[in-house]
Image (cartoon, rainbow, N blue to C red; front, side):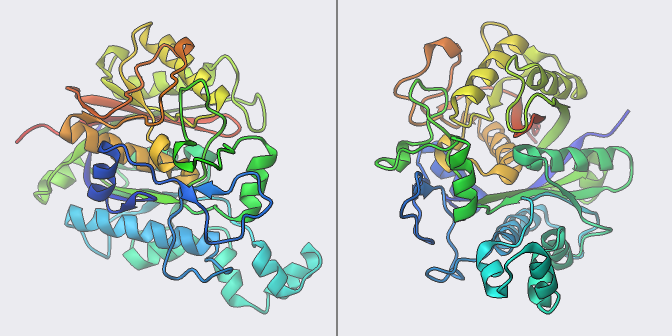
Length: 408
């Protein structure tokens, strides 16, 4: 029988703050981290707000690159999780991390003075600083080097499911007996003009510029798109034997994970939700549980009309007409894309610890057709198992089952 996977460290960085406890306190209070973008000029853009994590290193008109910012946020979340776990560098296992796709951004392209891609490739050869920053996998390599992880860092980019995919990879590595401990993380910092424009062209973003703090409103009649966000989440995962053998405090359990993909559309999932349902079913089965054992669902809950409708339909298909409470923390911290799965798994563990559900804020006009208890305000709730959903563009879907630590 495969060993249980213990969580011994949690780290979080979002627009609500730095640190897991600061974030959890803000979520329980129902605070929004969404605000106008100030680190670059948004004049003329349809969406001018996001859940930003600004850094002291940002300069007016010259913010850090996506790669540099992702590295900074990822390192902060991992450092917090490691400190809580009692482990230190060199870390005795590998790094599994979800990261955004890497490409040379427009400020760097303009600095290179290249008019086309062949010219850019030639020009970057004389700039090892840029080559090292934007080479695929470089961000993970830098993070792995800082924390002294073992082996080649495992980088996964499965769109909005990346953070959950990293957790799944870590779980599988421990179950196979390849290691006793893994850092599972996700980091995201794609908030820059080009990405904002691309999502706007897909009509995926909210345009509620007059009230950005109310823009992310999952499961409501007035939902009009998601809110981009920066952030990072990290979990230290260990086999139960490894954790108990060193006397570590166990914060909770990763009980199972499941994935399912479809090829319906480049950016959309199958409208009948079949792949989403399969991912949830597989995660519950992998945990050795039945749907009725799930006491709470942390929804993907993006605040887009189609996603919220499909996720509600999938919950009713899996759980019946009376699903457990379902809430979306994206209502407060926006959509952290590659980091979302890691962040939301961490939130589930904190909710399990304190027996409190995080709310879905901005729910003043709930969509009655969805048939969900979306937790409009934080409340006490007795439960032992939570399900965290991550559904990526193009139908890349991963669900993770988290369990409460047993009382001492």
